[in-house]
Length: 113
Image (cartoon, rainbow, N blue to C red; front, side, top):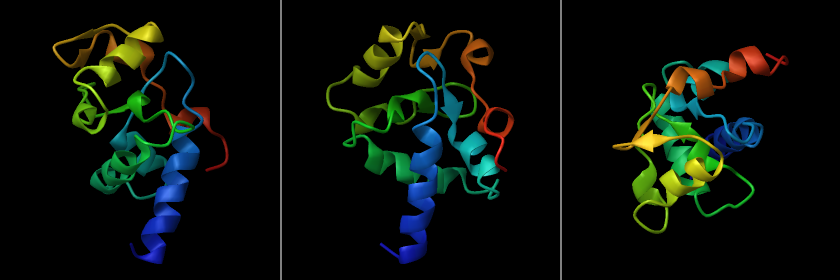
């Protein structure tokens, strides 16, 4: 991994650690917050590596319309969904119900940008 990727991944993880329980954000929202709005895919790659790091709530990061696109990176078929449902977020057909209600925007919530 290139050093600049490692730094980027660490920045992604710092944001992801701050997502409150019962809330979700998107790859794109994290990318926008970090000043690289077109790098949602890179945020996704960072989150792919985070599923094995218990201190990073990777299950709270979904795609821009609330789909659990990263669920195949979790152990077990429905672990991502189960983790979200344990936090009070309803998921139907891999889609978060009331996505807007649960959405946490780091650009609005974190004030150090």
